[in-house]
Image (tube, rainbow, N blue to C red; front, side, top):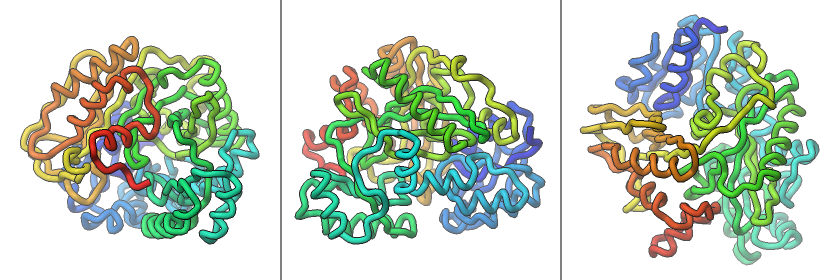
Length: 455
């Protein structure tokens, strides 16, 4: 096992990794921007190094500064968390080229699965069901339209190198394709430095179900069951749960088996997530693979009793997987709410600022992953996620009841948060019945007379 690990991230995920390292008796190095000098991850790490000004592009997104910090502090490995450089092939190559261990997949896996069109081709070759669409990128709007006319509308344009809903547009008829193609292309170029797009058939009422995977990089992998991430806004997840409500046992087994075999076939190393669209008829189709730890990984930890970050570290250190597939068990039901510093009443406008009062919830079956404390200033430079509240119960009803209680107990004064929005969702009859799909939030906004997402 490593003796020292540098955590190349900030906020709650940096804290999560630091805590796992401490339990494994691994010393930690935090990196921070000038805006994060007083952040909790800096306080709790054994060492810390300032790597630049507040903007991420001048600090957390500069590989040479992070790698230099690891070398001068004597770290043996770098854990990227999620976001920032976690799925950056060049960064992973530079880490390993510097004689350090990248706590994540091999660079080739990141490259293959990060390129959405290449990932589709790889999964198709591995026997994974995929939606009808382009075999690679489409160069022009005319090419996209010819393909869409053949597939049938609606279709969705997706950034080849995308994520987080950027560079994605739903095209419902041919007359709007050229306009939306240019919009998606420009957004993708601005967000990822590459405007390449591909086309897929768009299913109208689908659920977003993902399979958690862990591989040893030598051809063995296990799946840790599924998470349902259908409650989302502008293709960004807001709530997640496991098991997925109403998922037929046969479909669950097929999805897990399919994802595991695909991970074994590509020799996947570390934690990753195979994401699927689940149609109303029970058919499922590969959407993408996230080659990193997910924001919602605590949901899986709560139902399986396994520590995904420790598993990442052990696999990266060359240890075998700690258990076989038949030993993985899921018990009860878990739910996660992502608490963002945003104002739901004002179109989810960001709400950075000083946290004047903070009280985390507690009690049976409640977990809180957060870097907040009273007197902390939420900076405006980064993602608005400030806390994750996770509950576990014997069944879905108990998990929901505990989540309502936990949200009601939470006090975050000084900034606005999405807690009121989550409480509304938890009272919605459709959600309570498990009848949600990826347009659930959009339909609620439309019914309330609010503008929906730009799809």
